[in-house]
Image (cartoon, rainbow, N blue to C red):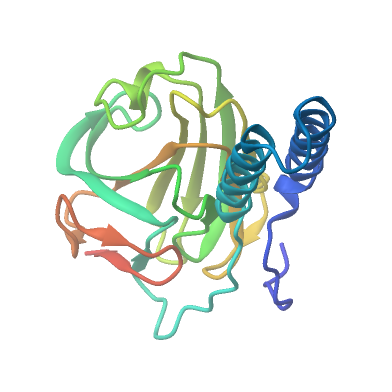
Length: 227
């Protein structure tokens, strides 16, 4: 994975969606104009709603270029924009089968949905599990929803698990990381479409630097310091 160098404004994952949505809204508006007249209230309302919804979709696929400022050793950076919904020690039973510090960030429809690598290291494993599409902020979403799991080994040999979780509206999880690759803060980890969540499972002894309810900025907010 190469570090981001270009000033990308819209994520490439949105290209197909934006083109299809543009065609649908354009056809809808033109049809309303032909049927009711281009000066009719029906056409005006349809045009306003179409433009508004399209701008929301465009906003969803924003992809700001962000470079982390500061030392990266032992630092865990927020993998996404959103709100912290979990900060607690839990039993992680899918990979580690032991106690871990869980930090979970929920992304609403209006957040940037690009995901960033949270720590420098090497990708040890990448897996995908099919599942349900219930609300991503629910506790059971971490184990019941469709999800991708990425395990990163840091230069200090700490293992960090990052889990991309689909939400009620999310129907596609994209993961760019591949087993055996070196990964770095500032790189994109993946993308989740339309409302979702990212969980991190960190070694016990890691110091959390965020609390429940706090907003995070992907690749900017430091959420934890490894012990």
